[in-house]
Image (tube, rainbow, N blue to C red; front, side):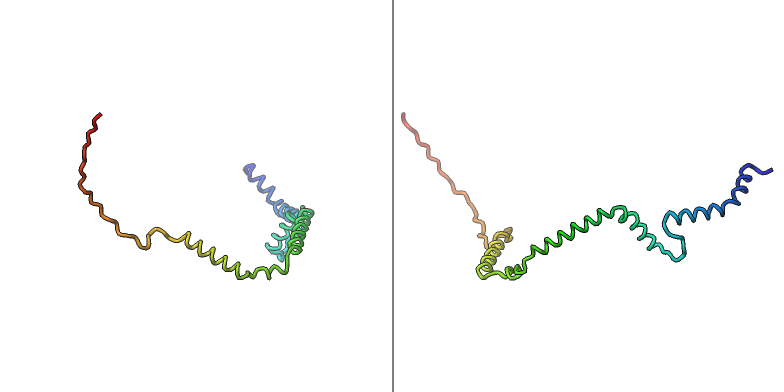
Length: 137
């Protein structure tokens, strides 16, 4: 005697190839292309990214592109071609810069060890005499 499980399994084994064919056709219709051996994973990935990221928000991407083009145009319009000539410093400016560099070197020099320190003097106490003065009132 067959168990109910075996009866159901035998009944559904005949339908498995038909269900697989239906599944493949449905998946192919949902992804927008036929499942062929020539399509690679890379093209499928790029196509999926294009369909899920770019196409639903075309207005947003075109607006962002327009904003970046405007920023680029304003940046190029403000560029002064004679600014390269202004980069050459005059002689007084260079002297001032060198003087500032010298000051900075003096300020931040390592002062942890004195250059020429005097040797410590030895202190020897001398005897003191105390004089008591008496005051008459």
